[in-house]
Length: 249
Ligand code: PEP
Image 1 (cartoon, rainbow, N blue to C red):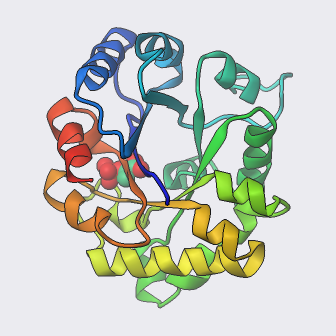
Image 2: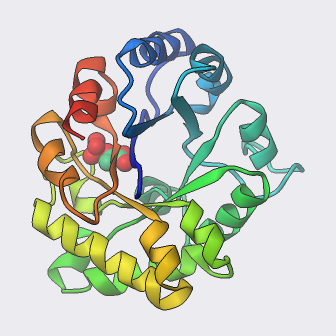
């Protein structure tokens, strides 16, 4: 059985004080034992948020990291630092990172390996642009990103991580993939994992959907067999919306 995982990606929002307030509000909701909750504050708030949720079922993730342990990489944050701040997860290869900061499948792969080496669980994002979808390239794109991002991992390492299918055209646009479209792509990603890493890894790996998930569409999306959770941007910034999504799971 794959445990549902709902992650809130706060992107470049919230001061330390605001982040702690939201984290405490999330922590104080009634825990749903069938759902794992992850929050992804900006780097500046990671340590304080991790302290605020310590001992609760809420886990913390970084939104990115570098693959090197330390060194002359001005402005970057290492896996060891992310771990030290109290993170359990790290989001890697988000489409905003790919689009604005030049991330490629190769750099995502280095980060995935570095995360695993530091006992961080990667949430690896894949997804096509609108142009690619309209050109019928969705499967090719997600297969290439999945294979590239996970290259060189063992079946067990893949089984233990999380993949987030996030069609770029649905992120922050209010346009959600239909439940059936999202299910179809998630199932396809699982078949790609099966082909490369075997059936057991494919059955175990959790595959989220992300892209304008909100309380009104969460229940139907999360009811689909291959959608094991949600990566939520905008709707994770307000406790009522985020809780509404968790309640829909
Ligand atoms: C995201 O940032 O991963 C995301 C899915 O954003 P939104 O929910 O706002 O579309």
